[in-house]
Amino acid sequence: MKRVVLGVSGSVAAYRAADLARDLMRAGCEVRVCLTDAAQEFVRPALFEALTGQPCLIDTFEEPERGRMAHIDWARQADLLLVAPASANTLAKIAEGRGDDMLSTLALAYEGPLLIAPAMNPAMYLHPATQAHLKTLQERGAWMVEPAEGDVACGENGQGKLASNARIVEESLAALADRTRLEGKHVVITSGPTQEAIDDVRFLSNRSSGKMGAAVAQVALSLGAKVTVISGPTSVPLPRLANVVRVTSALEMRDAALTAAKDADWVIGVAAVADYRPANPVRGKMRRGEGNLQIELTPNPDIIAEVASANPQARVIAFAAEPSDDLQAAREKMRRKGVHAIAVNDVSRAEIGFESGENELTLLRADGEPSSSGRRSKLGCARWLWDALLG
Image 1 (spheres, one colour):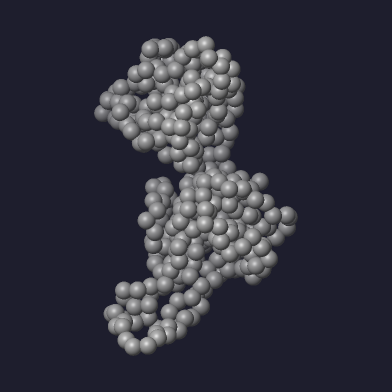
Image 2 (image 1 turned 30 degrees about the vertical axis):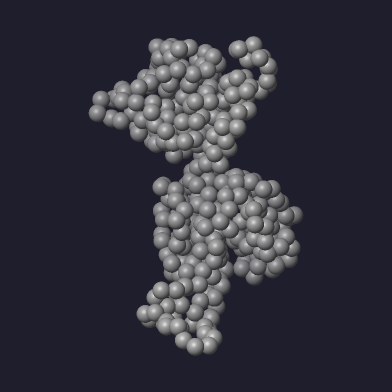
């Protein structure tokens, strides 16, 4: 049985959360309810406890099970956190990482799928601050059930009504179903740049931030996979629940990838691996001299090609950073590497790709026409990619 934590915030639509809790239970979910202080102006804890047979949380320091921190237990045990209705204030708290009540604190501790159904006055919903908070949450991977248009409680008309319970339940079940799509599968992801030593001070590298690899890993975890991330040097936070292997050079990444991929079901090569490394790195520090300096470079191994050859049981997906939208070079890479598919991004566009928070992927398969993600956040691209790969 899937466990849903239903967060109810201060909106006139809070009365509908009672029916929503029952609808989720009829769909086979166990429902626990958490109310904000403002929500109690419309509904009471006793109502939800009677409906669900579960305790209802309000205060940050409540402990239904004495000696247990409820916000951590509920966050770890939940398969879905659903905030419906979500007021403008609660959206702001969750987006900004404030934890000053039980619901916002629980949201901070929660690492699974988050589904938000806003409900408020149309002017409040369209306010730039509210829209910025919604955008922030979506970029972090939250699902959104947009409010409907119509008459709202204050008598005004516009977009702000809580979506229908049927729609919210439908989206909840879809989010819950996603959690099993990669269940029991091991996904290995290479991410970030590599650094190839010139001497003990200097190195050759590239502009890869590691954001795309982190996003692919985050979505894989949300789909139920066991995830190993082999990351080059990057400051981008990687998902806490992933097994992270830190490497520096391409040779280190190759060794780590071949080891991790032995029992992998999927290998996604997102890392921007340096094609060459200095043939004779210098111990210590090279001193400046007169005239030009020549550094001999030697090719690095093709990590994804080696992994694909060594692990025929795994589905291996490569990434290709190309300086134009011409796909011919990417098709040749896919053939040469022996991978199942290749995701291409055009790094000539300054607004996407390296170091940006957004990207646009074109997925090429050995059979079939190319498909495009369109311009999205990198997390949105990662979600699109997994949807395309899993069919």
